[in-house]
Structures are given as C-alpha cells and as structure tokens.
Length: 67
Image (cartoon, rainbow, N blue to C red; front, side, top):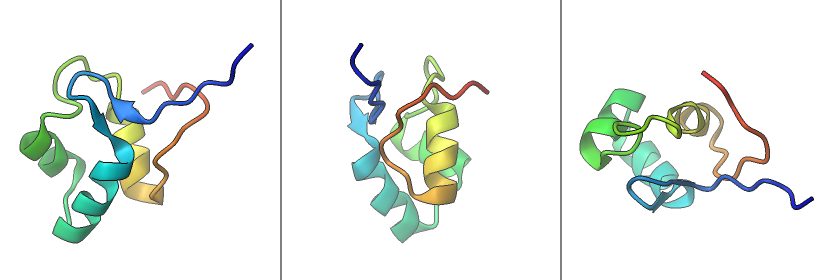
C-alpha cells in the first residue's frame, strides 16, 4: 500500500507549500486564506489541513485529518 501524501487543496489545485508562505507573509487567518484564495471554501476537505498548516507550518500530510 502506498503512503498517503496530502499536499494541496484539490478544488483550487493550490499546493500547501505555496499557501503557507503567503499566509505567513500576509498574516492570514484561516478565514482570510479562504476568502483570498478560495481554498477550503468549496468541498472543505482541505480545511483541517489548512488549519494545521497555519498552526505548524506543515505542508505535507501523511494521514487523514477529520474535523
């Protein structure tokens, strides 16, 4: 079985590695990030990953995070 690698918002096709420096530079909250990029605002599956990315800076996840 191949390991899971969750690295992007699927709906917007935006890698977390691109979003993290933008969010850090601009001081975005999750709400700001969603409003400015559309990430986390459609299907919502990336929302827990975005939240963790903003907290820890992690941009690649290897397990499913449920809200």
